[in-house]
Length: 385
Ligand code: GLN
View (cartoon, helix red, strand yellow):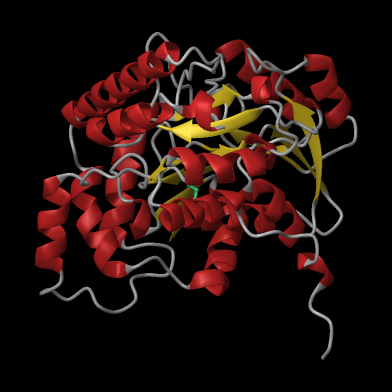
């Protein structure tokens, strides 16, 4: 047999998705892979039922159905104050996973460097490898997860082609402040670097923190390649609807990459999701309230267990410090947690470049009953671990 590609030799499978399989195997409450167990908005589901009987069964325009892009442009303008051209500044993709891959392939050549903050969402590592780029990791330092501006500048001095910014951040829950974003923007300008943003948690931010769109910083619109998604905002992770928003010259290239990667996102699902993109402010206020409640419920429960943890400013992930248990492998800890306690978590090491073994990640995008069940099970976890 010939050898398989060297490009993929260093890959493992996704640990996040592996933990879902392990959770299912043990019947654990799965708080590993971040997706909701509550229903998407009824209006979207009702429209989906209608769409099956209408004429949406063939390809839509490869870079996204016209009405979807128009609705997205309106929504984006509403939240950012920036007018965008639905024909020249948007590509609809199969989830933000494809958006990120298409962005990476559009801006990097093999051997180019890309700055990635650590901890980071595990796909970014694979994205850089698949596109032939080389990551330069810059630590976000616990417990505040702030970066050291000098360390960041040292990374920029290696002349990276792009920086990946996940804001609000998975897994650490950080919401970057204006001052932090301005440091990044100034460096991107000075060293002539693209900024690829992952802003899929744009609407899940806890008061008093606020989401600032990177492209809204002075001079950044032309450099920013925003990857977004409907997954988290409308609780439809399985629909795989994401998008890239960027300036017309960048989008020209992203369109081509996307066309050859996947042709297009599912036409009936785009059509049904337009209803969501057209929701008014109430929807986002309710979403905010719902997640704030879940966050408080879960954090209170964890506090009763007396275990130290991060307090997310945005997104729906919490890192728990498990160092007191003295495990050498956080993966072994998570496997045992799923088996003996019945709660699925992701080992923190899959997010850190540094040899970090003291965290596990849980998420709270679940029904309150599911969260309470997980907390009940966790009550006994000191005895069982
Ligand atoms: N972003 C989610 C997480 O971090 C889901 C990842 C995925 O499996 N696509 O868990």
